[in-house]
Length: 402
Image (cartoon, rainbow, N blue to C red; front, side):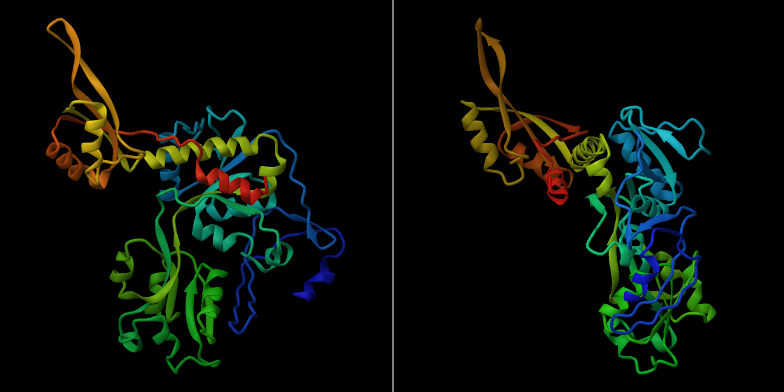
C-alpha cells in the first residue's frame, strides 16, 4: 500500500469513492472500493486526526429500519431504557433515563462508519456489519487504521438478529454433486479466463474468505436486494449472503455447503475507543448500558423457584436440595425458616427454598424438588440478575488499558 503514502502526506479531506467494484483474489492483493456517506475524514500527515469532535451529548446509533430496529427498541425497553421519539419520521430521539444520550437512527453500515469518523460514540448493529464496514472495511480505512482498532465490541451477544454469512450454490447442474467448499475449489472449470462468479454485498469479507480458503480464481459482483435470483439469471455462479432459516435459499433451489460459513452473526453493542477514553461521561454511560443489558439477558433464561420443605434444620434441608443436580441455583439455594405458632410458641416445621433454575431445566427441577419433599412450588419469571461486577466490564477496561 506504499503507493498511497505520498498522496496523503499533507493535510487534506478525503471522501471515499462511489460504488464500483473489482476483486482479484491472489496471494495478498485485494482491490476494492466501497461507497461512503457524504461526510469527509480529515487526514493529517498520513494519519486520521485522532481528536474527537467536541460536544456535550453522547451519540448512540440505532438501526433505523427492519427487524433489528424493532428488536433493538424492545431490548432497550426491557432494560428500562425506552427510546422517546417525538415524531416517528425524525432521526433523533432521547432516552429519558440517560439524560446525556442522544439517539440517532441510521442504517447499520452508516452507524459503523460514523463510529469510525467520530460522529457517533456508541451503536448497536450486527457483527456482520462491524466486520464488513469496520476498521478493515475499505482499503482507505485499512491503510490509515493500521494498528489502531478504534472500534470496540462492548457486548458480543445481545441474543437477537441471529444469522450467518454463508456461501450458497445451485442444487442443480454442475453443482448438483458439490457439497463442500473444498469440492467447489477443486472444480477444474475455474480459471483466470472463467473464474467463479459470486454475487454479494460483502465486498471485504467475501474476498478475504476466498483468499483464506485457497480459491484463487474468483470474481465478485456487487448487488443489493434479492441475490438468490442471480444464479438462475445466469449472472453469478454462487451468492454470499446472510442466512437465517435457509428457507429463501431452498425456495430458490440453492444450498449451503460444508465449510461455506464465513461468519456467525448477531446484534452487538459497539463503541468508539476514542470516545470512551476522551468524551466526558461516555465510559460511565457505557457502563450503565452494559450493566442493564447483562442483567436483563442473564435473567431472561432463568426462573425463580420457591418451595416449602419439612426439615429439622436449614442445614439438613440444604443438604437434601444440593443432592439434586438441577437444584444448585446460581450460587446455591437460599433456605429460610417458615415460622408458625404452635401451642403458644413460635416454631419452624417448614423451610422455604429459593433457587434460580434455567428455563430449559424447569420441569426437571420441579420433579426433583417434589422427590425430596418440596411442596407448594411457585414459579416466577426474573427481570434482572445483577452480578457483583459483569465480566464484560472488566474486559472493556482491559481493552482500554484502564
